[in-house]
Image (cartoon, rainbow, N blue to C red; front, side):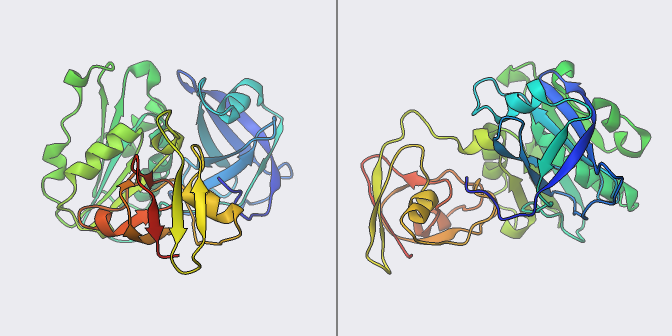
Length: 321
């Protein structure tokens, strides 16, 4: 992912502690105690790890807290190295370069109610949202938090606090599909609510499939790396830009958006994880392997999210760019 244009500042690590198995919680403050830039629930930071990686992490604290930023990092042993670098090397007292907050997963200002579904480390932006709602006296929300075990449940103590506990359901499936939580009773009737889902790709795909009857504007997803990672079966393909006539090769591990940028073609984008809709592009020809969490139904025959989706095997694409 290309770096977001941002101002960087060094913050001191005031807290570095386990939040769950393989998850570290970090609290960051200004070294001189200055008030930090404001953010809204659902926002994220980009950070520069000690080893020089740039990664995106959601803020978990309530927006009213202007003295600190709180993030949680899942150590991914088979990842690209950024999370392991933070978990293995970042300690209290260290300085960490961070961007100003940015939000691609905004909380609706008003709704008939709010339903939150989180899986694993996907609890981080949603924790900020429910903390905000609780602080504002909003009681019309429910959180379902799905994890494999008690040990893998981040922020368990916070979620058990009186201000939140009555509206939180935590379910452990032990990794057994037969023990999965039945979400359908919660999703069967939209009822004017807004739905927010963040977690592994399998969970978000299941929620997307069960919410096809919801208004599209009331269903919101935040994707992490595992939802959009390249696959060993990915093959190179060509995409033709109809307006310029350019024909670009898109190799495995490179998105259409990245291939366009490398060739000097600019395109609006934001989350670059297939969940915000900014890079939605009209599809003129070809078959798509859709990997986003935005398009549904007939839209999948007419549009493509060029930040994550690819051509289906054996197909090339023509897009309206």
